[in-house]
Length: 363
Image 1 (tube, helix red, strand yellow):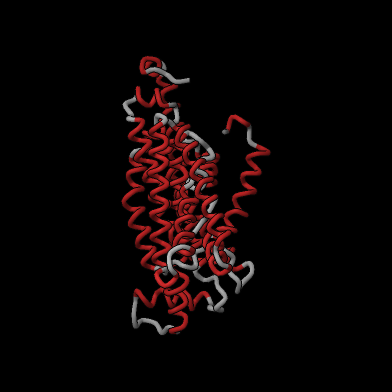
Image 2 (spheres, rainbow, N blue to C red):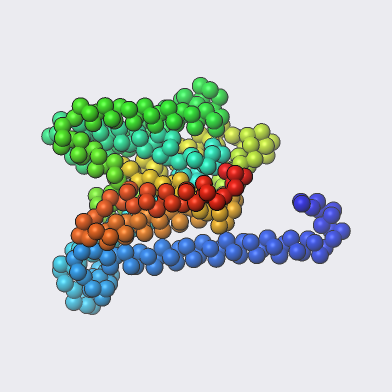
C-alpha cells in the first residue's frame, strides 16, 4: 500500500519503517553489484591462467606484471606472447561482450515490455549472419578478409534495426509492432542465409557455419578498444534514462502522462541496443542467450527497477560469457569449443527451470 504525505506525517513510525526498508533494499542491491563485480575480477584472474600451453599461475602473472614494470622481473618471451597476444585480450573482450549483450537485451525487453525480446529474437543477429554470409559467399574471395566480413555483418545489423523502425513506424510504433517486425526480419534473413549456404561451395558453407557458432578466437586489442568505445558512449545514456524504461513498464499511456516521449524513447533505445549488439557480434559471430538470460536472472534476484536491472544484467552477462568461454577452452583442451555453443548449454537449463517452476505471473 502506498501512503500519502499526510498519512506518513500522521504516522511517523510507519514513515520511518518505510524509509528503513527502502535503505535496506538499496543496500542489498549495492552489495549484490559489488559481489558481481568482484566475481568477474576473480573469474578473469582464473581465466587468464587457463589454456593448453602449460603455463603456471606464477608465469602468467609475471608476464602480466612485466608490461607494467619492465625490467623488474625476468619473463619467458613465450609466456609473454601467449598471455598478451592470445589470452588477456580474449578475457577482456568476453567481459565487454557479455556486458554489452546483456544490457542490449535488458533494454529491448524494457522498451518492448516483452520477456522474450533480445537482439537474437528480433532479427539483429540473423541480419549479422546474413551480412557475414554475403561477404563470404558472394564477394570475390580475393577481396574478402576478416575486415570485410566484420564490416558487412555490422552494417547488415544496422540495416535490420532501420528496417524494424520503418516497419513498426508504418504500424504506429507500438511495442507489439516492433516485435512482429523483428520476427519477420529474423525469418527473412534466416531464409536468405540458408539459400546462400545451399548454393555455396563446401568451403564457403563451412566458413559460414563456423561464424554462426560464435567464437572469441578472433578477438584482438583493437577490437577490445572498439567495443569499449561503443559501450562507453552508449551505456551511460541508457542508464541515465532508466526511469523512462520504468515508466514504459507501466504502459504507454501511463508513461506519456509522466512526461515520457514514448515513440522517441523507444526508437533511441532500440537503436542503441542494436548498435551495441552489432559492434559485438560482427567480431564474434552469433552468441545467443546472453541478452535473453541475464535480465531474467537479474529480475529474479533484484527486481525489475531498471536503475539496477541494467547494470546488474550487464555484470551477470559478463560473468556468464566469461564462464562459458573458460569452459569452452578447458573441457576438451586443446580443442576449443565455440563459445556460442557453451552459452546455449548454460541458457537452456535456466529457461527450463523458469518454465517448470515459475508462476505465469512472472512473465
